[in-house]
Image 1 (tube, rainbow, N blue to C red):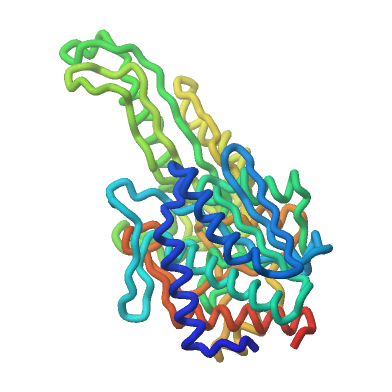
Image 2 (image 1 turned 180 degrees about the horizontal axis):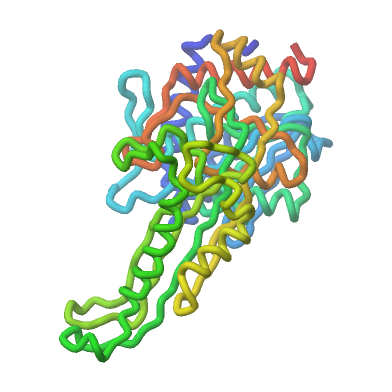
Length: 395
């Protein structure tokens, strides 16, 4: 086991996490993403026998750290340093309160990055050349195509198993993730004075009518016990959320000629049966392509549809040893869970690489008061450490 006590480890992980939170590594700040990579490199470059490689695709950086001579490690840590933008926050900062680190990106996923960094660094010091790798990207919040997908498809990154601390919880191991569609819907009309609406084709109203047809379709796939305030008892059904609705019109008495919206669609595989659904899974679109075609049909020919992100539902196939190790370290049973959200796991699963997806206890993800529980960070560190020692025979 690590020479650090739980108290020392807690202090170390807290400091690393808070240092990273200060770096505003968002999509709009490429220089801050680069600074975060520099911070990580400084933590790693003193390790003898570890090769650090950095890449860039479409302006997004990524980093691989591997023992010299190993390109496809037995186990690969994967994380991302990008966080979402909070435009109204003047600066990104953190504080510790009631055993939690609060700050933008604390739970998604700079706290987890601190854990991976420390585990990787400690193992490489104690067992030089141990077959453990580390991959950090900077575009997961944008879909991951220029990060982990690039590393897998173009650089040829491979491993036997992966650990991605970006979903689930300490004793919740994710086994399935919904598919994802991010769609941009565009409406073209004809502008006119708002006092004479019969002379115009209102692009905004045209857009809203099409979106209402889509929303009504998804409403039919909600479970019978769905409560608008409390939500469903089971989330495993397709959903559609409108995340952007805009027009360039800035004049209150002008009917806009152009408008657009963004839809965020999540959908499970169709082989899950639920008796409480209004619409049975057999009637759901089976793939991202079929889901997109159905939405295009509902929107109608007058609206244009552009795909931003597209991903199929993913089965993660976690390692039974990781489940067993989690139960041993925590003293609690592990629950297999299904996730509404997605992760970079899908890029590895496309090549048959099993993914262990769990993480420390976190909350208020993507909120300004996002947090991560410090004691659970230490526990997750111990889970990963013990898993590596048993998996790779270095105990």
